[in-house]
Length: 136
Image (cartoon, rainbow, N blue to C red; front, side, top):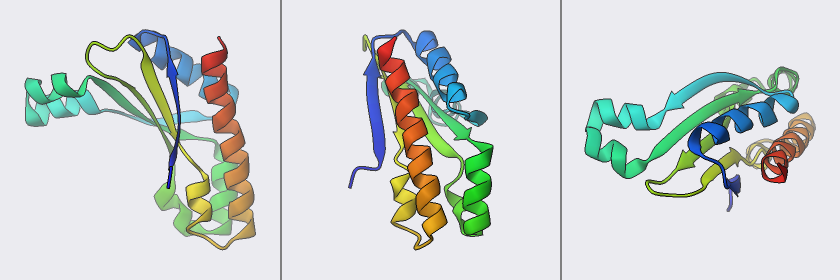
């Protein structure tokens, strides 16, 4: 089962991060958290592990309206929030990969009709953000 939507963009690291944040914001997503996996690897596992990973950031994206609807329908959905968006670039790569969670994953875990509607809306918005990244 595929659980992400992925695009590869011909942008440098900083440009990809900025454009990803902008594309998410245009779809109503704010960034609640940011995990710099490379920095964590470097501090916990050493420079060699960080260098092998390359650049890797996990953005915790949240659309408050969608999150509110999902949590009202099923409070346990909080375990799946926020929507993770990964921006990564392998060492020496000329392009950057951006991946979002596939919100349909939520539907497979819930029988709620409202959760299904929220997942469809979230998927539409996340796919639009990814499309925006490759359109520019």
